[in-house]
Length: 536
Image 1 (cartoon, one colour):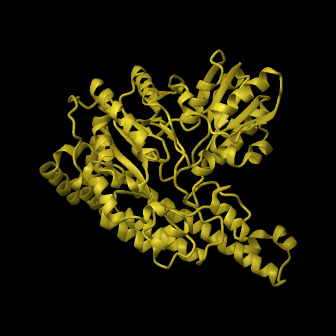
Image 2 (tube, helix red, strand yellow):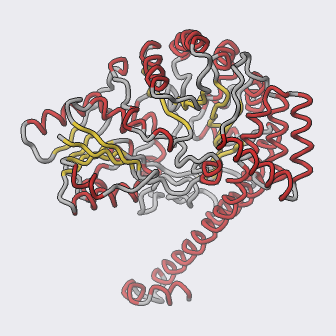
Image 3 (spheres, helix red, strand yellow):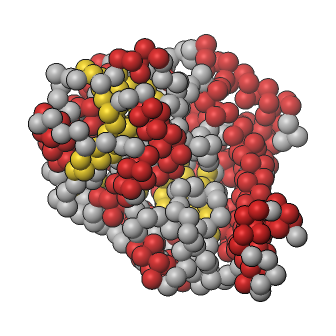
C-alpha cells in the first residue's frame, strides 16, 4: 500500500507568525504530530510520503503514486481538509480521515467524499481500519469509546517530515486533562483522566529527534502537561539527566494549568530540564465568569500572584484570554488589558468565545436555543457562533479595542522588558556557539527595524541596555520575544478588518431577519436581491 499523508492548511491566525518565521527562513511553527504518530501505527511494510500543505503543494507525481490518501485535521483546518478530500476523490483515490475535527464532526468529511473515517484515538481504531482494508472493504467508520494505553504508542515517524521547514518540533507525553472547563473539547476527545507515556518512551522520541539532527525548540503538545503531576515529575527527573548527557540540545515549552504556580518543585524541575516558556489558560480575570464556565482551578488562588511566581522562576508566560462569557459585565476587554499590563505577560492570546462541537457549552447553548445555524470553524478571531448574553456589537468592539491596545508597539515592548527583567536565567550553562548566517541576518533585521526605523527605537535601545545591565542571562530569549512585534503590528490591523467586516455582515443579516419577520420582504425577495436587501 502506498499512502500519501496530507496535512491541511491553517488559516492566518494569531499563531501563524509568518513575519517571524520569514526572519529565520522557516515555513511553519509546528509539524503534524498526530499524522506522523498515525504513520507509526499503520503497518510499517506500507510505503509513506507526507505533504504538509502549510509547507508546500502536493506534486502530480505524489498524487499519481498514492493508493490511499490519509488526512488528519483540527477544526480550524476545516476548509482545506474538505477541499483536499474532494480533490483526492476527483483523482479517483481512496480517502481516509481522522484527527480531532473528523472525530467531533464526522459527517462533514463523509459528505465531502471520505471513504474511511478513522475516529477517536488511533492506537485502537487504526488497527480496526487496517483489518477492514485487508478484508477488501472499501468504506467504513471506525470508532471506540475506550481510551488507549499510550505506553504502547510507537515513536512518531519524524523521518517523514521536511525538518528544515519547522521552527519547533512536537512531542507528546500525556493525553487528557483532569479539569472540566465548559468550553473545552479536550476532555471530550481525550477524557478527564490524564494518561502518560513512560519516561523511557519520551526519551526514546528525543533520541530519535537527536539522531535526525534536530537542535532547536521542542513543544510538549500536551493540553495540560501537569495533569498528572506525579508522572510528570518522574519524567523530568530522567529528562534532566538526559539533557545534561546530551549538552542541552533542546529548549522546551508547553501548556499547563495555572496551579503549576502552587508546586515550586515541579517548576524548578522544568527549568532545570530546559523549559523556558509555558502557555497558561487564564481566560478572564472575572471570577464570576470562571465559576460559570467551570474553570474552578483558576479561582483557588490569586491569578496575579500565580503569573508572577511562574515568571520569576524562569518561565516566560504566554496566556490565553476569552471574551464573551455568559453573564459577563461590560468592560471585560478593559479588565483583561489591566490584568495583562499588571502581570506584564508579553504574549496574550485573546479571542472571542466559540462553542465547539459536543462540548458542555455546545450542548447547553443548543438546549437553550442559542446556537447559530453555522457550525464553529474553531476560529477564535471570529464573531461568536451563538447568541451571547450581552450585545454582539459591544463584545466585538471591546475585543478589537483590547487586542489593538495590548499590541500597540510601545506597550508590547514595555511588557516584554518588565517580564524578562523579573525572569531568572536558565540554571545551567550551554556551550557557546557562533550564530549561523540565518540567525545573524534575523538579528540584523530586528535591530534595524526596532532600533532605527520605528518610533519606539529609543525604548528598544534603553530596554536592551538595561537587560544587559540587570539580567544579561536572558538577553537572547528577550530579543526573540521582541521580534514577535513584527507579527503583532501587522496582526492588529487584520483583527480590526476581520471583525469590522463580520459586524457589517451580522448587522445586515439582523436587518434582513427583522424585515422578513415584519413582512416587509419575503425570503424569496432576499434570495433574488440579497445585496439590495442587505443595503436597505
